[in-house]
Length: 311
Image (tube, rainbow, N blue to C red; front, side, top):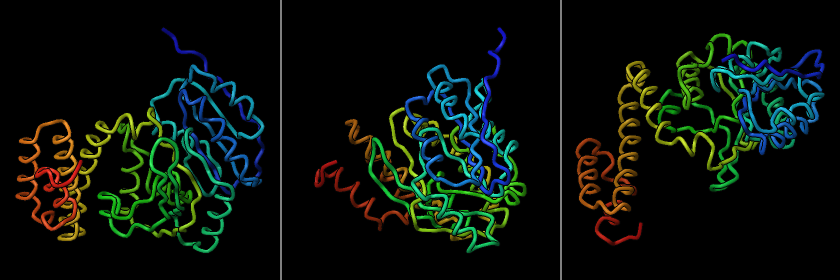
């Protein structure tokens, strides 16, 4: 069966874009209008906005047509997935600073102005990181931009800054390379690790520049188990190099991360009524990761198992 012909557009003429924003989308017609508007509302004349849509069957294309004058390029056609869409956006981009805004996320008013100030103040930084706030069907958390120093800062979330707040200069993107299209949930996570391992100069601002939307259908919510499984594949790929570079510090970070994951599994077992299985996980956690025994998470899990604390 032949594929539908691509639908394309984009009439915004940006002579010398400083920013290129790439938005990937698929059947997010109920969200994408707010995303597009948040880029338009930056009110900057140096922003090139590119949308790569995977052939949506909802009203996404109608909305893209409404925003045609604000978009430098858009296409709607079946594709290989989100990392492929991001790579296509990079290939079509002309800006010096690249950002990736998913079709359910937003930039806050003045967000790109803040990133421009950060870039001006750190001309040697190829990696620019702004703060991101969460909104939607979840806790309203706020994460300031933070510079990762070690690969374990990314691999084990020791210096966490959500993806929408990350920007890169073109020269750095050219050095790090394309997003891994074999990954579906963790290609951005994989890319951040590669940025650290490639040798980087980064700069960060604590100011919130973007907002990440939590909702039931988002990949990070609906596909949590698949995301964790894919994260394990990424970890296995980079762990030998990370351990070689960071040694004992990496091993301790790894133990803490896996210990917390195991304790989370133990609490889920307890909530499901499997007290024996939960105790087995806790004992194994203490044996494999003794560093966890002195943590509040370990003590709290044991208290729940003993009935001293509610789940």
